[in-house]
Image (cartoon, rainbow, N blue to C red; front, side, top):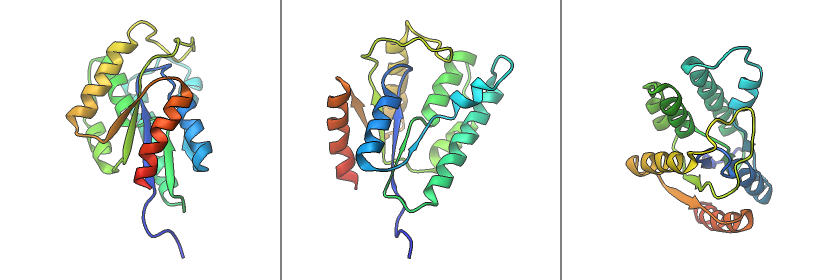
Length: 175
C-alpha cells in the first residue's frame, strides 16, 4: 500500500551564492529525503551558444518534470534547490520579461514552504553566476514576489548551522 498523501514540498529560493544548495543538501541529509537539484546547471553546461528565454523555459520544464517524477514516489518530504521564482526573476532581469507560462507552473503545484536565502555569504565565482554586485536587489525581487503571491515562506539567515535549525523548526511543523 502506497503513501496516503503527497509529500511536503520545500523550495530553496533567492539570489545566487546565497547558500540555497548548501542548505538544501543539509536539510535533505537531515531528513533523509530527496533533494531535487537545479536543472539549469547541467543544461547550461551543455549549451553551445548564449542562452535565451527559450532555454530558461526548457530549464523550467525539466525542473517541473523532475518534481512530478519525485511526487510519484513514496516519500514524506521533497527539498528543491530551485523552482519557478528563480526562473521568473532570472528571465525578468536578463531579458526584461517573464513568460506567462511561469504563472501556470507556479500555480500547478502547491509548495508548502519557500526558504528565501539571504545573501550573507561571500559571492563565489562560478561560470554560471552573473550578478556579484546586486544580490541584495535580487533578494528584494524574490521577497516582493513571495509577498505578492501570499506564499508561505521563511527568510533563512545566519550561518548554515543557524539556517538548518531555523528551517528545521518550520519543516517539523509541516510534517
